Length: 256
Length: 306
Image (cartoon, rainbow over all chains, first blue to last red; front, side, top):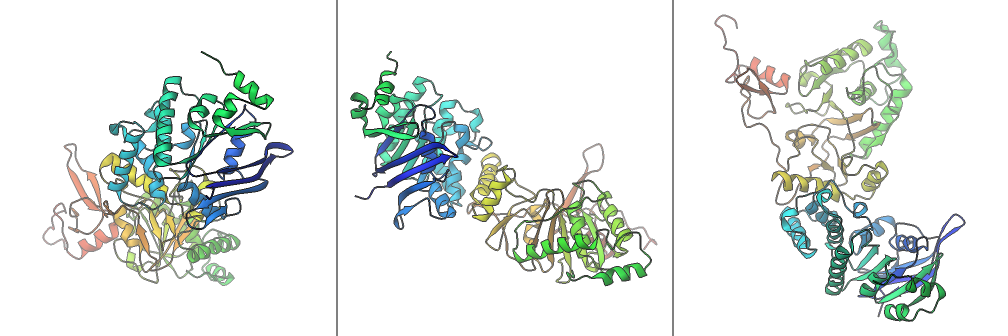
């Protein structure tokens, strides 16, 4: 089976400082991988490097493109990479404001990716937007409201709808539940889990919330100071942490 | 337009006893720089060419870009016409016309057919232009994506990579909010299937006329951009399959000349809400009236006056 994403020895430096280094892994179709670690451990740097927002200093990120199989996204041309990020990739930002157009209606936000890949039929675009708002549990009559009139949880769900409307195969998520209260988090996680299973998505989720990865991720990667210190199946890593830092991380979770 | 205008123009200019200004106000080096930008613009239709816009003796927003382009293309033999929203007799049009009368000594006219260079603010004349004419537009904001994407770095990248989906988001918003594409002026167009271009704030009624025989030059002084459409360039107004582009105008005939095919201004004429619709193109309207056409609101022809 060909991996959907093949990461080989990725390194990104900020001057002399390490962003992340020596990261390698394969992600298979339908697999969800969690990346955990404390602030400054390089998880967001890694995610942005994989998603093409940052250029790595070393290494290769090969993606299984629909047309030509595995291609290195680092060396492919910018138009090709941007096309990938509009079609086969999705990126869910921690702050919905970064991923939404706040002065464009919810329908326009969802429709933008469709129009970016050439949809030119208003009725069809509107129908997909309505369908997707329904799937992320946003009432249909909010379609012409701007995201600025939405609650934080709704904005985050809208961002997810906007990203998934073109049927991507790989979703990058950066702290998708950050800043939401726990009941809203729970529903969002439920929704994400449903969408991931239903659409057979592969996802890479960066978070510092271990509960999120336990729910969503099949595999886990623990990062510290830009290095990967432990990898394995989520349950295995969380229940039987081997590395000292992972043990600290797991034992730091507050029990209610 | 004569890109190779030389020092001899200045000589002829001086022979006419006008030594106070260089011909057409700008110095020759500046005009040469602007002509280079114009030629590049003509070579890449719809592409915004940066140029070193000069301070002009008028405020930004009054046509500094158009004036610089006109200055660069004028020759002493040209006949110059200026319109402001179709009219020859408004402050902006009169000022710019007098400016070039004074600094270039060129002949001026109000008749569209007699002019060789026409500078316009926000209209295309009703009369079809010819191959030997140049139409110069004053452009306030040359970037059609400006209000959708504030970053200039990003919009240039979007032009470079032909990522124009966002332009349709604007039209989508129009339909979602108003039930139809409500954008009535500065309606975005795609040039030769490549660049999306802001046709300056002309009413969308004028958009179909952008495919014309004359050279069209667009100058944005404050924004320091020049772009151009060579004759007969393909210009397509953006739309949706189920909401096609429509060139709209007020649903009335002109009250003065009775024309049904011209773009109309709406005037409130009394305190009781009385309205008069009249051609925005004053030269077109006057020519029709001179030819005997009369609209419903035209002054009655008095016996013995004609």
